[in-house]
Image (cartoon, rainbow, N blue to C red):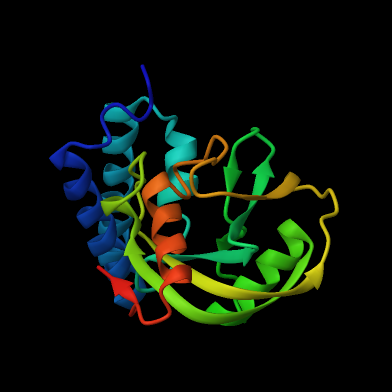
Length: 210
């Protein structure tokens, strides 16, 4: 069974809501019996996803039940860097291409994380200048994940630097809007790359958000 085939059905929303309620209960409950009940609710939510999707229970728990405290979406930053009208993409280990970016690390702001990821993945120094868009990932990218993600696309000014092979990326390159390589569409699809080009070309555009 393809582990993503069933991740678009209403039950996923129910399982995510159970997970959210259970995590809130674990964050704020003091009574040991209530804690046990909320732990069981959280476990049921992960069992639902494992059963319906074919993803192993261990993997679901790692992705879905590893956080503590009040549950909030994860933040993913993506750097849109242009040179001579072309956009910078990096080639990942699976051979597909994406905007430099990743999870916003603890102790980093959106600006500093965007600049850090560009440096680590593409070898370039940039200044993050404008927010292009703030998107709810599940509205734009497939496959649907068991947790929520907010994607922040940031227009950056290229300062300098050059690519060096690293553990995360194999290569980098600047590409025309009409001549893009095979994209890692779970991270950035053609519509999102087009959005970055439009924002780059039109300085009067305002930030888009869901």
